[in-house]
Length: 474
Ligand SMILES: Cc1cc2nc3c(=O)[nH]c(=O)nc-3n(C[C@H](O)[C@H](O)[C@H](O)COP(=O)(O)OP(=O)(O)OC[C@H]3O[C@@H](n4cnc5c(N)ncnc54)[C@H](O)[C@@H]3O)c2cc1C
Image 1: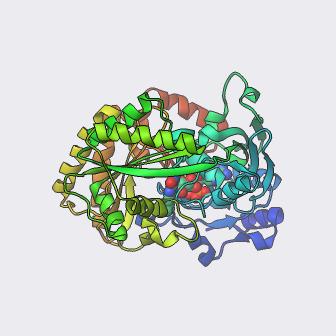
Image 2 (image 1 turned 30 degrees about the vertical axis):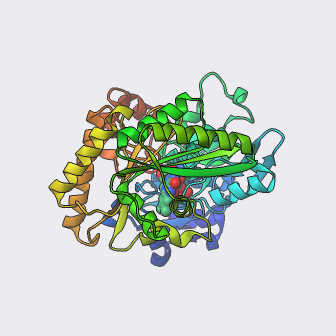
Image 3 (image 1 turned 90 degrees about the vertical axis):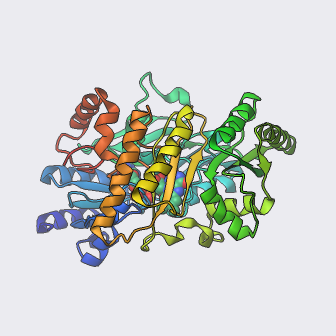
């Protein structure tokens, strides 16, 4: 339990209203959206809600002095358990640092505090006629700091990349309490060593991000989309590759299997031929001529691979369920979350040439575990950085209150992650490793693990920041 001295020190920094050791407040921060978060008790000892970077400096110094672990909390929408207070201690909620500091349409940048929600940043950019290219399904609640820390990707990723491709500058507070600024308003502001990469994707383990300057784009005048059904994964991927080779630069390339497609068909009351086992949704943006040409070339490449155009309402149903706004929230698959049917994911990457093999392995494993009728299927988000990640979402058909059932699910995931590594793949696409895949971080990094450990010890000698997470032992 929290000592009076710690509570008093935190109250002294942010005021009584913004510190709580009450159980009802602490419980709010005891779970994120991971099954790992449900499987154990991660209730923190105390919650603090600073309003400025200077307050955070003082909080971090207090935590370091008292050797109390401190867990940075953005929107708590993580699906990997990475904001959870694994070793109890302090949860530091970033949401009061939510200002849009500057929108600069002329230089195509936006500077925000890290606790701003993605939706607010996205809308602020649009209000100034520019486009912020990260719009995850969780945009209403997730924060910029969380997205940068988890290396998020969204439906626009095929053209604009991951969220870290949009980051130009960061302000970070280190475990020592030192405040550092890295980068500026252009890529030229970065020194020879791109230190941004140290803190992006670090899941709060190396520093606390307080301010972010992001790249924005001219708002595309037109946007359109269509989807194709394919007989198998290989033909779907070949269609994507030949469209790319033709010079197409779609903003959305999203592959999903028949099990996922069925949900959209049911919603749109459309029957899909038995021969279709994979679907790809393509989106294009730009002026109307560019959009039309892009979709025409994609259609041609898809049809050459045996693809069949899917009805428009299937495409719309998919788009509405993934591009969640307040008006489409009830269409989200995740509305089911935190019920007994918990959606969870195996967020592994495998090389492009291994997709079919990995998918077959997954199907065999499902049979072995008796989970043939699992609701959700495989999703693949096309990104511009080489191998397209293979991300499998399941609605876990278990009662998450029963430990043996949860353990069985964890065994399934372990087999999937081990296989991905054996195929030359990696442990995460866009959701961070957190507790979900942290047991295998060392294996993935190999000899580079010692280097990372050395950096962690240098930056956070007392292991204050997100202690026990992301493979850093407690
Ligand atoms: C319904 C749903 C849909 C989703 N869709 C997508 C999607 O389309 N694309 C996608 O990429 N993800 C998606 N996610 C996953 C999740 O929303 C993202 O990982 C998101 O970026 C997490 O942001 P957050 O603010 O909620 O962070 P949190 O969950 O609070 O924290 C995540 C990690 O970031 C760290 N962190 C947070 N803020 C800071 C900071 N300021 N400085 C340092 N570390 C920090 C935390 O310590 C933790 O390690 C989805 C999740 C849900 C529940």
